[in-house]
View 1 (cartoon, rainbow, N blue to C red):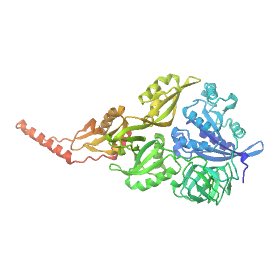
View 2 (view 1 turned 180 degrees about the vertical axis):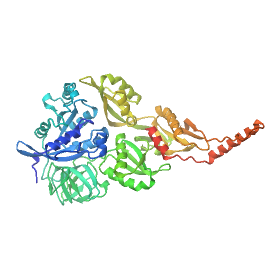
View 3 (view 1 turned 180 degrees about the horizontal axis):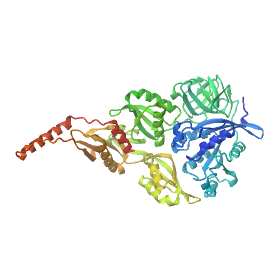
View 4 (view 1 turned 135 degrees about the horizontal axis):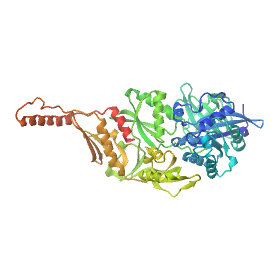
Length: 602
């Protein structure tokens, strides 16, 4: 069945974590009879991790049908994640829509990520429908009017524009659907023009290969059509196309403005790129929908299988994860201490943790993840410019002219009473306070800082929650590189460099970190028959040291009498033996020690 483009609505839901976005999606599916008697909460969150952590990790698309004023409309909902680490998913979802539902929790008000996603939606000229959720909670009455004032100030809307709902109990859902149809415009497009379809996601199916999810801007897609992927130039046949309901609904034709999927028998995950444009091979479009830009990871770490035999299985699993997560990247590498593994790029620490969890749960592979690093820009004295995201590639100090590290612009939304604590925290993290401060109603303030990304990605969020007692949220975006005094800390165990334990850090924090690392390593490395020095050096200069004491046999135990010199000779002989043993002995660092070490550095 071919639908009139005027009867199609494409929209997404944007909200902060735990503001009820997935629950609202459940009610929309239920009210439109797309699904009857929902037994599972958060139906679009199909990963166990999403349900356990209460967050949406992957964007999801689903098509609904709704009757309004005796006309049947097609509603395409493209669900979006709420966490800052998955902002790339949000941007692709927003690019596929004409409208957005802005959901705000009545008990928590506006959060930083809400403001960030709203700004992204407004840049794409989306129609915003404000929704106030969780109005049924008893303690929401005290904050109801304050939150409405905050939304009015943020959006510049009227009070009547805000739809009060309870997604849990289904209150106000019809009003939401009616507003979607009456306010969000139908998609624009030329059904007779050359095919242009934006890829906003892709999935791996072990039976059919890679399923590509798209939104058509111009033209149409027919079953059996030859399709060209514009960024790679690859051509495939559309063996199966259809609509994105909870189960794939196969069709012979997907029209202009609609959302759908295509199966072309693609087996190689690297041939499908989110953000690419699909066109017809016989009558191709001249230009893609937008300039294709591959997302750049911001945090880097290495992943090694605990069992070395799992290497090939790990490679295959990472490729499948990369397929539906365009922001994740990996390359092969080797470490003398850990064996063969992969150097991976992530958007943040939560993103890294999700990848680790998915490897263990979905593919049964347990891994070691090294300490995360950011990407540094290094200018050499010979004029060469290189990017370093692994301490093992760090050049000699005498060859370096200057080092630049990535900086981000941070927005923090909090209550005024915690402003002093948060400013102190940000300054301790080498943050620079900016003038872009703004006061919201009900005693809230938005603070702005420029900060090094390396200070953000590790434990900043935990510290922020601590100093604000949970009443703060933050968002950040990359602004560029700035010159910085970065040093490489090299760990030496028994005077031998352990490259896998080395890392990059700002000079101001190098001494305290070096002492901490030495102390923790000296506790976790097992004792030997000889003493083991644990040292941390910068440019060959030792700045911290701890010694692991050796096991000592009491060689004078059987000396019951005689001159004291006899005992001294035995002790001196033992000392010489220990010294010789240290020279020829080898210190084996167990994997448990490495795992504990990475936790310490994190």
